[in-house]
View (cartoon, rainbow, N blue to C red):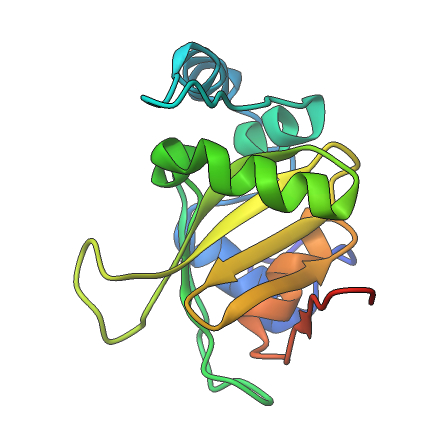
Amino acid sequence: MPENLSTTRFPVAVDAALREAGWQPGRWDIRPAEHWADTLSAYESSAGHRHTVSPAAVEAWAEFGGLRIAALGPGRQTAPPVVYVDPLAGLHLARTLADLGRALDTTLSPLGAEISPLGAEGDDQAVLAIDAEGRVYSMDHTGDWYLGADIDRALTTLMMGMQPTRLTLGG
């Protein structure tokens, strides 16, 4: 398949952003994913909170881990962030992830961070998390957001600048 064509898995613009970041169909790097799983599993906060590491998280890390994905165009409703898939961005958020997981009746693992396209290193706008079923969420200073039923839909939401769904009590 010529390089300028999308796979059928992602919209063309998302596929192009992923390829620009170094992704390709079939990418699977389990070594860093296992390292992240070990690091997160061994972490315990000063208050005794620990991370949950799910198979869905390890799969997402193996395929997309280490990538800095930037949209190649403007977003539909929001400015697309740069997505950095590095679960250690959420290392110190074990309690936050556990609390949100309880509210959603699931467990959450850190996935990475959204970074302002204009920001500098460490200028995280949001933390990304993935649940045991593969659903992806974002947490920022304005609230908690549902990005998609799987990593593909979440990346599409983010890279296309589509408005995510806000999580609300009772909703």
